[in-house]
Length: 313
Image (tube, rainbow, N blue to C red; front, top):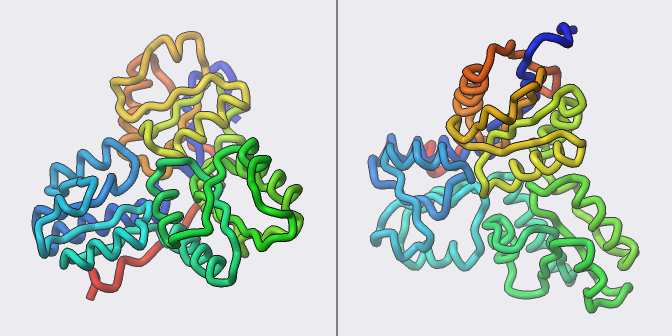
């Protein structure tokens, strides 16, 4: 164990890229290598400014709507997934599509379609406006409703004996989801839950790593962009554990006063934040004063998702 008087940066394990993000970025890179620029990407491929800017420099063009893609152009769907309407629009426009939807998000999409076909009304726990939520709710045309907070459960108009099921946005806080699920099961005792928890393994692992790290440090830095749901949850979690926490996605955003008088700094990174950025932020913290870097124990992730078949054949 290190001397408590030693100034340190403790690195959470795991942190940074998950398999779904790694795959999505690889898909854009592979498309650029194979077909050349421009490659169009619907919405940010992942919610990280550093990653998006890096891909933009290579020739990726990020768009909001498919009408911005020339006829016959190549488009990549982001890791967050898209609605069936967007898929049909791409087909109607004759676009060449490479789908970077995270396989864990796709799993939720398939659950929603099956539940609705089986006659269930589906409740989605998630944040309004998030592209993953829009994509998931857009898998069906009706009988799906959004739940954002515990208070929303009370206003649901359904009877307790109706066929009700729920799914969740993959990047939500485990604790936040638990409270909503408890409220739903109280109101609808026969509610059908997903066969496997929809909060992804990477979200769970990074939150567990923060729970382990936070009691050992005096301030937490979360590497992540403001639009990143899972990065925001990491910052909120460490704050709830009583540790001042800040989220940054560039070294210059760090402020020296955050570290004044603090011996131990904790650092984690959201699932869409690259390790190179985390290391650049570590180097900047060390400029404020010498600190040893120590990697904490934690889960070692070995999940790999394969590329779409139409990109590797």
